Image 1 (tube, rainbow over the protein chains, first blue to last red):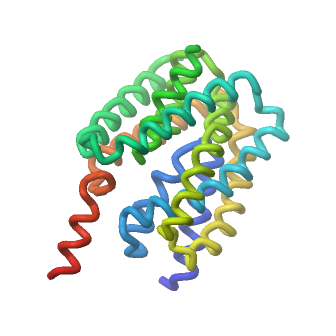
Image 2: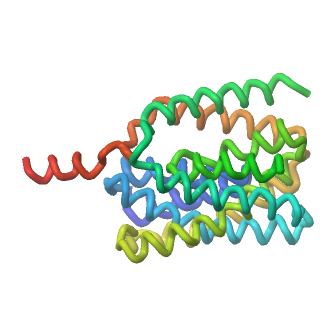
Length: 119
Length: 131
């Protein structure tokens, strides 16, 4: 497939899912870049942020314009996530990410089953 | 306080490069009883400040592959537009169930993922160069 078309498709799918579910853009685009475009892991992660950030800002504007916005909740969560994000990035090389990834995978599956089977 | 803690914990996970938002949204709906659309809105917005800081850092470090991002962002914006509007017009109950399917697939992906971020990735790259 033509590389330009590949890039456009990757972008479109990532934006679509990120807008639809309000999350996951980074998780989707990193493997695409690593396996389809052959970009090194750490560069793929960095590049993913430069792509997901504008898409997320754009989706946020659409959500806010549609009235899906709550300032107190957003501020509280954002404050926590900024502090947590800095901490997470600083311990990145000191924790066994390989196992954490699997543990969080299991938590995500458990949460998904809970949501699927409760009203 | 509960919201701060949920944000904090998912922020740590996100900061380590493991999808923090995918964990934040179900945490908000399950533990804080926040409606699905609102949880998604909160996640999108809470991503912006941390990602901006990370972006500045990576730009300085020249980790970003600039020559591919324009095409991806342009088509991504079209996707975001369509995805966001589909989301807004879907009933909350159905969106929550669809999200659960997405979460399930993401969970499987995290388990089978072979990404080496945070696992001495530099050592590996170095080995490749030496061979």
